Amino acid sequence: MGERGHTKGPWRVKRTDTTYYVESAEGVRVLSTSWHGHIRKPYPLKGEAFANANLAAAAPDLVEAAKDVIASRSSTYKARNGRSVGIQDDSGEMVWLVPFGQMALLEAALSKATPTGEASDV
Image (cartoon, rainbow, N blue to C red; front, top):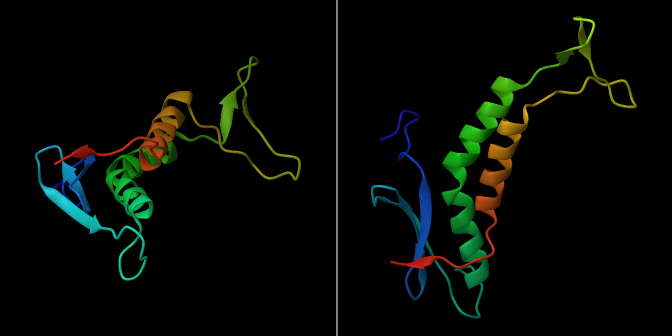
């Protein structure tokens, strides 16, 4: 079990003929979802099942990336004159500044949640 109580990531999606599995790096099956070829209830269609499995598989990465963004945000930056300066949008609301590295990790986690490819076979 991971430090947060769930199976340690990263997780990946694998498939059989009618099921997508989400597995940990150690091979622990975290969850599975079946599909039906043309009847949606009670099972999702194949594409929907694949999207669900990928969203679940990306969860550990999304949590870590979101925590990194929150921890690294700042409401000010140091101006050339040495003063701390904030940024506001057109409505006057303060804007958070996030380092590029943390934003890139969050974008990578989001792209893992919405892949365009297919899962590997189990």
